[in-house]
Amino acid sequence: MQSNPGISKEKPQGLLVDGHGRIIDYLRISLTDRCNLRCRYCMPPGGVPAFAHEDILTLEETCRIASILVKMGIRKIRLTGGEPLIRKNMMSLVQRLSDLAEKPELALTTNGVLLEDYLEGLKAAQLSHLNISLDTRNREVFKNLTGVDAYDQVERSIRRAVDMGMKVRINSVLIRGINDGEAADLAMMARELPVDLRFIELMPIGCGAAYRGVSRDEILSQLQNVFDEAASCNCEDGESSTNTESDERAEGIGRGTEAGKDSGSMHAESGNADAKSVYSDSHGPAEYVTFPGFVGRIGFISPLSHAFCERCNRIRLTTDGKLKLCLFYPDGTSLLPMMRQGCSDEEIRDAVFAAIQNKPLKHGFGKTQAPVRAEEKRNMVQIGG
Image 1 (cartoon, helix red, strand yellow):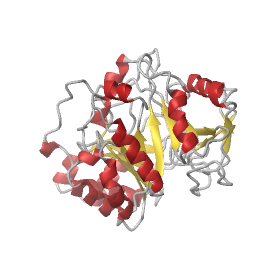
Image 2 (image 1 turned 30 degrees about the vertical axis):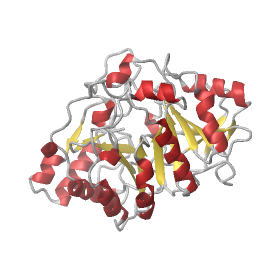
Image 3 (image 1 turned 90 degrees about the vertical axis):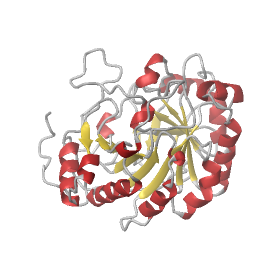
């Protein structure tokens, strides 16, 4: 794989850079491959074979890896699953991560079913950023899509988290023939509440490959037909943003990447005249707009129709201890054996740095030609959301 010219291969001090010059500062940790829902595009109705207990990272091992990576330059950690809240004693990990001297931003992605009972503890442990998955506001569709009648619990958790002053993002996936007509209904949550309602294009991974998603441009068109013209979010003055953090980045490294932008910057997307300019989050791929009368924002994460690979700043740690570099490819480095063979922190740092130099330049979703590497065959729940 060719690297960008002039990019140093020496281990960075406090700045983790891959072989293409992208700053890697965002770690997603999957705490479990188990889930209390059976969303059609994520898991088969009968579930998937779960990892044996001895084949997954302990919470202590997870915390050790996170601590090493934070020292290497990771600034944000998101806990995911499966459903992370069903991992026994997960709150102890949240507290340990909160106690790290480097103080990374802590976030959680959850389906929200169990969340209400955890909110006080999460906030006390300084985890204030929540991503809550919700694909419909129709109880019957929710039950049909997830296999569980739990819509009321999820909406109650959302409203309670907002009332507690937590930063809430609602992640929605629209699927042809199931909930593709619900964009405006879902967007109403951002009209009423100071939340980011984000439409995520369906990823053709595992069960998801059997369904058709809805593109960003089509969703935006639907919303503009209902709510009038979309406006770009000016996050420098805070008037249209629920997320005003801004990170300084190293000069000359990662320019043009998500990590290399100031969080208040604006840019225009080519090929989409309706969107005009949109706001890009400094820690992720979401692009934001708002509509008249909205107190929150509408976001789009569009890995298929508007790929953002050149701005990718993330890596994943799977439940079974693999450092995963890209959703599309199974490539990565297994850290679990290293942990249990007594490797030092320095040896683990070396392995992480070497792996990140091979982070792919881009994924192969939607491409007609055969990928240059093997494709990921696992379901999303086994990888980590």
